[in-house]
Length: 83
View 1 (cartoon, rainbow, N blue to C red):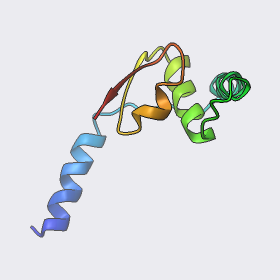
View 2: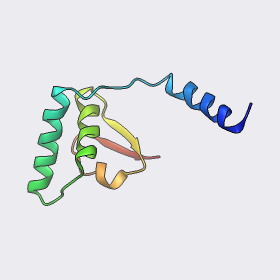
View 3: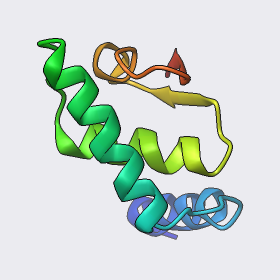
View 4: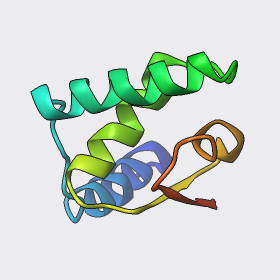
């Protein structure tokens, strides 16, 4: 098995155990509230960060593991851990 095939198989094994949450109406409304609140405080975040945080929050996930700790720490109600 080539290195690429082995890495692909490993990735597929990890991903098959993950639950993927969709972007839905509730998450988009929550993202708008997060982004708007932070923008008014002068702490603008990327739309992608607001969307990811909102998807987690509306699904009841209160902890996010990421390399982008600085941006996600700005969101209330979401604990952030560095990967």
